[in-house]
Length: 99
Image (tube, rainbow, N blue to C red; front, side, top):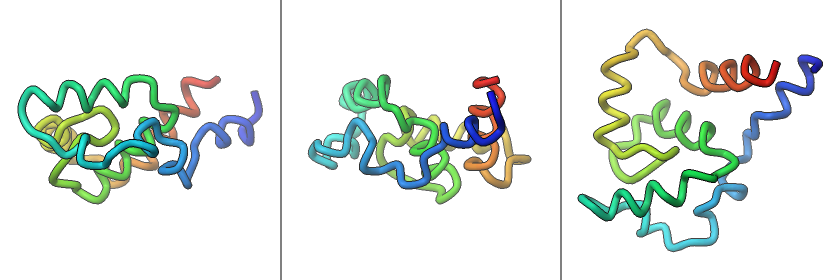
C-alpha cells in the first residue's frame, strides 16, 4: 500500500461521519452507568480515533469521546505525558497498522 493510501484512512472532517452524528448529543454527556451505553455507540464508529484525538488534544473535560469517558481520558493523559499531539500519534498508528 502506498503512503498516500495510508494517509487517506484519516478523516480530518470526521464529525459528520461519526456514529453519533444523528443522535441526541446529550446521550454522550452522561454520568455513571449511562456512560456504558454512550460508549457502545462508539464501538463501531468509523472515526473513533479522530474523535478521541480531538478530545485528548483539546483536553475535553466532559462526555464520552472516542469511546472513552472523561476519567479514562485523564488517566491516559497522565500515563502518556510525552505525547504532544494525539492526532499525530493516532494517525501514525493507523498508518502503521494499514501496512
